[in-house]
Length: 147
Image (cartoon, rainbow, N blue to C red; front, top):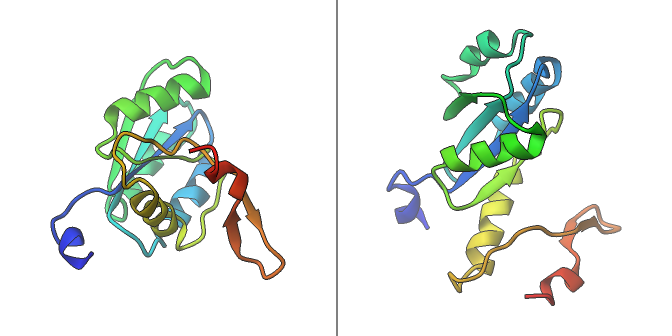
């Protein structure tokens, strides 16, 4: 895996729709700066925010591989679709502007995709993840049986 990482490949694109959510978006971005993971990018699809979002995003450009797109999107789904079009990776991770990630969030997500998607004609669209009694995240087995 080290040779793959040394090639500078972007393994995941994190797409975050936002509209006037700077107060929570900054926390989401701060949690993404703490990732211990594969190289990733963050695509912010801003729907014309009038708060401090655009000026404050500049502060994260030196800490994250950040792309900002701005437009009049048709709600969150339209913003997500626009973010997908700007994404550099085939692995897309959707976050909302009020989500905080654990430091291994992207690493676990990408690792799961790399191990699960051995057959390139399949895509992992979504899963139900549960926390077991030991506090570990587990993919619900019935989701895997669908593939």
